[in-house]
Length: 439
Image 1 (cartoon, rainbow, N blue to C red):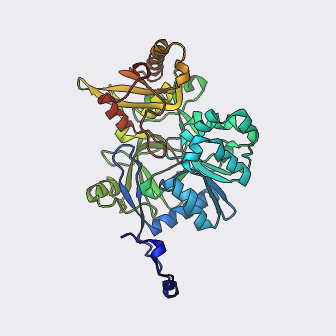
Image 2: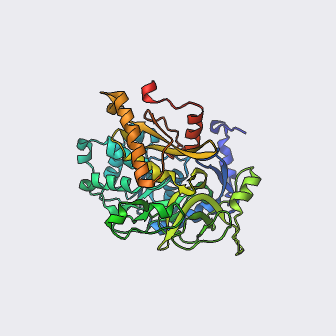
Image 3: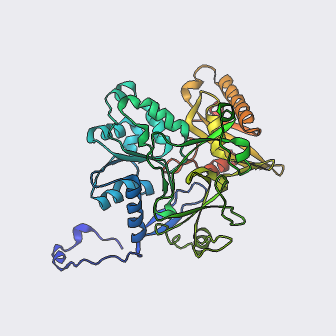
């Protein structure tokens, strides 16, 4: 039913009575991002919402004195929580910038933080790269980021190079690395599952690439070992009130620290299920350990490991590529590919697997900066393809089947900037990815 507010009899206000909502009643449907499947509506209750807001506030040290600055859309779980729900629950100040305004001029986000003394903000990884790439030296000179106490990086995998680029670029504007608060969450858990506790620097581990491909974590002991390692960023410990386990997906056995498995979550902020999807609700929200502990777990579909009680993510189960019996995690391959050639845009890589002659092959799609092709387009693209193959072979000991350069923005993403690798794979197989040299 559609009811026009200008058609309501204002005299009815005299008869209005407060009706407290049922804590377990539905507050709203929150749709998943759709990175590996079609978006599904998660049924979020009033209890889920308030509990997670209180959990996040306590974990991040937020209060009524908090000044939240956000450009994230309110239909996105992180945007809803940091831009609206947390300020309402805490009685704090919130200032909202439209997503389009940020994307058009990223400096507007940091200018608002400067002008208003913003203490808390949140964004996906790509946004921090965008600030480094698109904010000029002149714009940067007038910024003051010293008031920031909590900068959440989430919604997509947190990458160490991005954190370093941003803090090096804005150190002169008072940005403190201790403000970083990488975290992990998902729509099915209302929002947050883990969050980094305040440290001088974000915790970054260099782990052996060969062993992690087999599901075992070994931290590089020295610089020579680190040269053959991949970097993973801590997303912090579980927030208060949540139980998290790393579980072998097939056997459902809990795994010890430094073993890669699926992240399972149980707690009061976990939703009851998907709207009108009973089978999927049972499969995703009904996880039961091999030795039942009386709890039903949310199976997140994310792969990660615990180290020192903190969560480190390595990829998604549905994105996992298995070549010659070894697990290859797309985010690791993407980070290597991105650094292989200067013409490749920061955060502009997508890696997926395809079947060829009953074997799984690796395809790398890279977004190319147009200015890099100005002189000799064909030669640059050929050099780029060779560089990507060479770097991935050297770093991961695996061959690449195909390298596909595409124009900026051609890689499919969700509304929060996450890579849609499955959609990219479909476009590749359908011939829908147009390379710059073919346009």
